[in-house]
Image 1: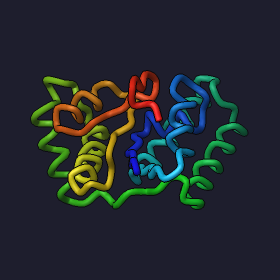
Image 2: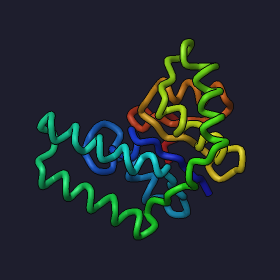
Image 3: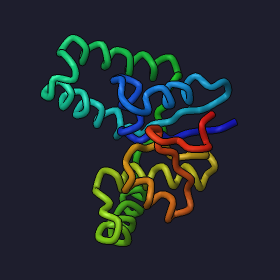
Length: 158
């Protein structure tokens, strides 16, 4: 049974049609698969929705519909919310930024997402990180975690 950690760039694809949306939807619907997100992604989704309204990609009513769909997906267990970010994750995020901030342009919130995902990977709670963010994917791979870009999933398509 495969388990996937979706960062915000992948999660957003469930609530706005774009390249990779069909792939993420298949992951969520795949029998036996487990799809996890961080609590941080739930906050970041508000920013994603707001950006899409500002740029005209979503109307305000579509924004509210997307919010309701996200809440329903979490409430129904279609998407599971991972454990809270703890002090050890902040420390890990700092180490990731120290190591990869310059070399691979890792950013702050991505380092927190990645710290949590790598911890879950080490605990065998997830098999893959799903992200459309190539920087995050490169750092995750450098840290020993397999990644999938939903816009170009390659041979890992379920």
